[in-house]
Image (cartoon, rainbow, N blue to C red):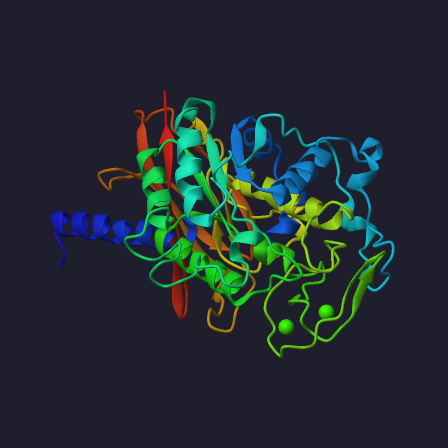
Length: 426
Ligand SMILES: [Ca+2]
Ligand SMILES: [Ca+2]
């Protein structure tokens, strides 16, 4: 039998586990090809919060293309320059793109965001981190979000960037991931973006694939913000992978031509839907690539601004969710009222419904705790059917501080429990 003290310790321990679970699974911001479609669902609140962030990224020419794409979105679609809306490939009809790929609703103000070409003397990959840090440190108060991208030139065949010892992720070298990470850790109030490399038709190289995979692994291990441009550009809008041009398939566009023999290696490369260059990877002559990356960039910035990236339907009553979700409360911080939303999915086989008095559903509790583990409110304590719900929490009787809210859903063969943090500021 538990006494009060044991119960208290158990609750704290349990909440600690829950929070760790939450952090492990949700802390990393990773933007890849699956993120592009989220652009159309960015909530207005996070769109304007993202727009207000002062962002700068450093890059070579493909970065200029990406920034062109961001600038395109700042126009209403109807009055955007033609270079923003070129969905036809022109001279090579084998790679059509649907006009919807270069369409957007509304205007997306990126005037607080900037792109910076590398300063002179920063040409080699192992000079980049030092050049970047030197540039940013002198202007650190001007930015909230910073990052740089390696060019496809730096992951060309023969590059040492992916070398296990002397490469970007090798130990003990200068100009490496650890230095960039240290810069990030020196500025906990700033957000630092880690980009996979840009891609070209000729790159596809072993080096590019290894570098990008090393970065993905590093991002996961270190919970850093990953903007996976390479993943975004190496898949068509219908999610087919694209590989290097050493494939025995001739390609021509205007006067440009390649017909490399098949090297029997499929290495991720930019899709011909996104560039007209047989060997290169610039995003200018057709628009689908730069608009695609620009849309993903907005999703990235909205996530950095606090969006959880979860799409909710406007018509919640008719939408049956696919998974359990406890959303971040909104607003947060709050005073004194906030809303907490959660979803209960249809029945997976492993979580059969409970039945009570003819009601099919699950037993749901949503409780609020203070930092000492004291329960301060019970917001839900009943059987619920599948659906998305929202409850209000009024904290007018509580002091300022950090609170936890925990959703617990009991099924016959397992429970779902998730905890999130919110701040009451009076
Ligand atoms: Ca080819
Ligand atoms: Ca190949």
